Image (cartoon, rainbow, N blue to C red; front, side):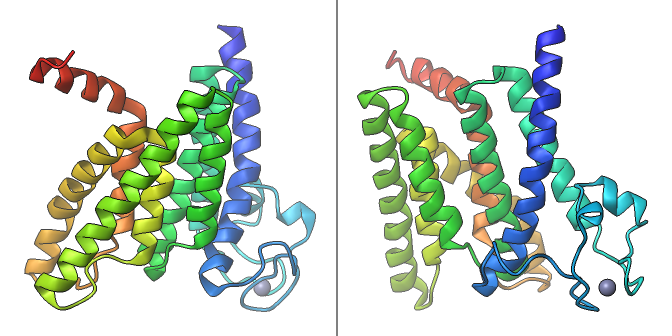
Length: 257
Ligand SMILES: [Zn+2]
């Protein structure tokens, strides 16, 4: 019992720091700014953020959500994203121990969180998350041997191809852009982590979640643009955690295995 707990604590500390960096990425990547320099500043008064005010979650609480310089409020989204990332990394470390599997799950979840947030806020899925995540997925698959690399590559191709085709069909049917390029690249990235069967499940779950949440909003005319990446991210996260059991069940249902 003590070992998973220790692993979870290490995971939480790591995740909090990663979450802090994720905040920088979410704000700067859609604006095509560097995530390395300049150092973080208060967006209102321009005061550089000191190290003691840059400790994940804690600093926000100690500052009671206000900038030390101008006392303007700092969004509660920052500590929430840091906390969510810390919990994600802690959960993976708890479940898998301090291992490559834990790192893989934690990185995938972090990428999905980043994609969901930039897509929800600005309808942008940065290439750093998609191409960068694709590279991470392929590199990590290499650790499990050639078969895994092939599976990851097939997953990427299937993910890319399906959404690309949906995009082509959508343009033909509705005479407008139905699928953003970011969604297509995103599903190539997701494919390296969940494989081609996982890609199918992700799209199914994403469409389901998107319809359930967005159809009512569209019908009452509240929302026009659908940030599909948000729902694909939800679908991919669910697929990563319980996808293998669902796919196994479905194969037995079909009598394939
Ligand atoms: Zn300020």
